[in-house]
Length: 390
Image (tube, rainbow, N blue to C red; front, side, top):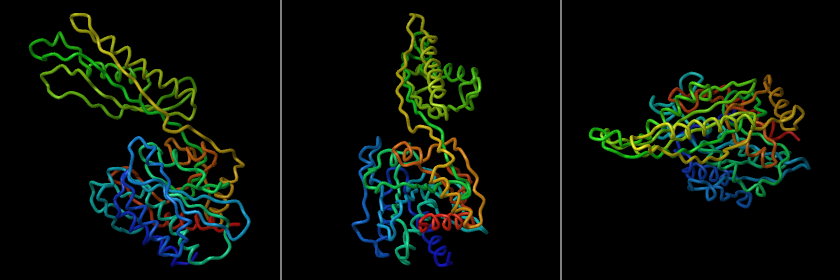
């Protein structure tokens, strides 16, 4: 691969890292990508956006950006994807270079390499193909939105606009030589706890504390091994109570608390066991907390599946192609299973078996985030091989 290609990829990376774009606010980044494609001679008819944001629970500024190129050879269409959104911690991020890494200039922010690095990789490949021409299979490039808050872009993508790809490669976090062939399934819960308000000084005995109910439930989950890393009878999974909101004053017995939690497992049946344990803990805790009149609290629990688990077979064509591309640049592919959700979960579930490869991102979602530039360059070369191999 020529140096100008890598140089252009790194320039695109710097530009994309400097554009804000938390989930639901990806319009500026999407416009940047589309403008670069048009400036490089892309047919405007090849560039589309879908309405995935309109079917998302948060709305949003824009849907997924799709660039669908015809091939110069009669081969199976290939899909290269990455997501445009970043987590809130990356708002205001400015990249700085130190040695072989990019860091956030402000130590209180993340960098946004998850997944602006992936977005830059596939954009650089698309632009290079437009510049060079030459033989290549039919290609679709997909920049998704709202990945970080539940994979909403991939979940609601207009599959018909992708051109029926038979091979699919998602560029996200980690090492470019790590080929992720499966991932866990995730379920999110919202738990509304209702108690009874009362003056905490004059008549606390008349109140039912929603805080006490939440505390008892969480303590039980921890005590019985249903919170954090979970291992039961050869099964494994995770759960987390991540958000607790409630109360307005210390002199009022808190009448309402909202809890948000999640459960994950590669085994859908075991994940359902985790969910049942969590629901039971909160419902029983509500019955435990009573006032002097015998009144107790109540809970309302709602939940939804964010993404289902998947695992590709060992002979999956996308997996074999990814490993061949890694070997072509002198790398050693390593197969992996992820404990987090990725766009590949929904793409696979919707009929497009997808492997994921990293772009050198490290410590994502933290102020310690950094991007390994040599690994980013490897990802560019791997993506190039996947795009031109016929």
